[in-house]
Image (tube, rainbow, N blue to C red; front, side, top):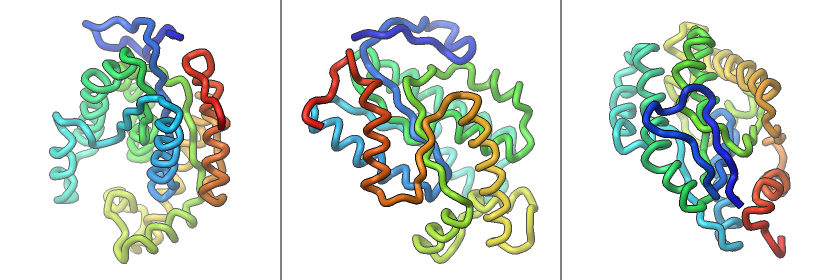
Length: 237
């Protein structure tokens, strides 16, 4: 079943949102929340039920994805430049991958959407009104799932994964603390404040990501199923 799409703002000047059969589902949550695991499990579940899936995410644009990665290596990327690069990355993916997939009837899973990018920018002092205008090109998803964890849980997962905490994910460019661990906790707390606020304002489905991954997957599936009803409801789940 087709559904009428709309943008958060003006969208693309040369593109009208139409009525397309696909579905757009965003999974939000800071690094260490388990998004990749849940995206993989959800993709497998959807494909086993004959739903074509496209997975997108931050820094995956053919236009600027590699450029962002290179720009972050020197730890000197300016805040406004960073915001514009991530917005370009998402806009390029939306125009050249997401919208064509939605037109073709795909379920598009966004491994983070505009909200994670906005939370990072807000933590760095960006004006909310400027960000709303910047990301006005974005389509409104059918569903936004927020994998919520505490900063200390994410710190433990980051340390278990690597012996070194990431410069940007620790907010070291903000000068929040001299110690990297303390900076990581302070920055992740800021991100959570902004994401929690967006969850209330934008109607995210919040899932406790500290639970076992199978329990999280069950909650994610329960949220996704109603979105697919009428457009190819899942059977045998």
